Image (cartoon, rainbow, N blue to C red; front, top):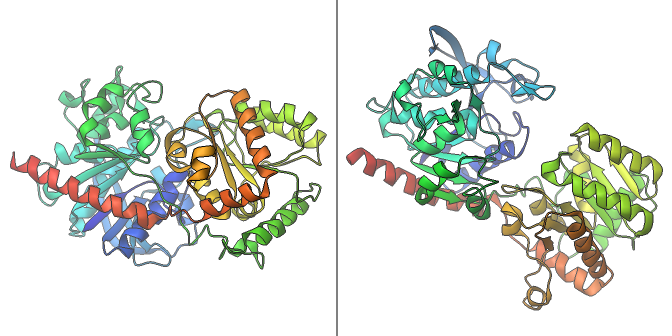
Length: 496
């Protein structure tokens, strides 16, 4: 099957979050299963400077944006270590910018215009290169106009009328919400600006548009697919989602085990390990991490880690409150890596300065250090307010680092709480809590630390987690089934 991925992010070209991991890994997994994926994305400055080889194609096109014509051209590359082609839409005024979507906490004011141009360019490229695709797989709000164009402006025109559309929601909270007059930029008839399709409380909403028009809709975990049906995680779109509930599917993201695998991890040097050698391997990695982070070297103290964006959504309000109490009386060490809200920079920085033997904070992002933290930590915390899928818990399981998570979204789908029943069945892989409070997190950490003291049970948890298969090939098989279903639904709609 020929699948076109329309996305704004794909590792290693550019990334701001999990979207980039998905669109850089899933196409390779699909190719490994005999499918023919292609990626098309904007030629952001980050992509141009990524180091990936780029070549010009000689293809140019003009796109109507409101009352003007905007010229773009096409570059070509491919995903490293694969034959997956990558096309990049080059338009310097729109995409040659310091960041992808905005700067200094503010979105670019012309984001609607930028991504109208991108969506219509995708369709122009399909025609210009005479590319034959079965399914157009669109990702998040920046590509959400594509299903609408296929159902309206391009519905009776080849080759687009043969193209089925799958729209994947990676995070419903980011919707692409613009004032109503931006509807004129899309080139679509104002009749579609209605409460069922594109209008959202008087504004133009890209996310709602994609959900309303796509042949099928998916999101990145089964639990998140259920959570977004109702407030607060529906973010105001519960009516639209409930209307499409028969067409909405949840498929978990996968982990890239070529990149995240303790037995081959290039960032661990000679300290690699597998499930057979994990007991000695993790001790070596833990001691190395403690030295690197300036912590007291002690194999018996629980080492708790957090890597990611320092924001409320990731549960840092809970983490900060628990840490402030734990550093006074609990025998545990903390390693934090990431950047985010200034208030957490200040609180965590102060905790590290006042407790250098217990708290190490790096207010940056380092991929190399993230790998060493996964290998050296005993536990990995993800007390998220919501988490559509999450990837770090999957990495942690593979590295024998026990996840401590709030049971939401993909975290609930991938981590099995340690209780007498799950332990007896050999299914337990971590520690979960439901109530979003610092007390619930603290109690769960106390429970985890008590298990840590029992080396027999802890060893069982580590090995059970490491044997889990959360690879992309597992998820890719489910996507292939959904692509087939999407194509069948589109054909049926055309016949009707």
